[in-house]
Image: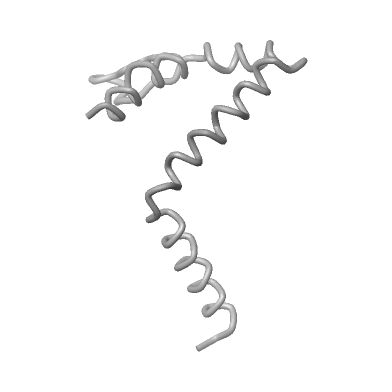
Length: 84
């Protein structure tokens, strides 16, 4: 086995082990919350608010489309998945 393949395989296995742990989701959510709070209360808060209000479209150009802001995706989409 090539050294670079071995290290990639080891990195992949480590990442999978990390993602399969039950606590990881909660820790990532706490970390994201802390970072968002810091960012929202920093001198860059205008950029933060602008980013949250930007619209993103999911779907196809001629038929089905859902257009929501990032805040809308979080409130409507991700929370529905979370409580499912």
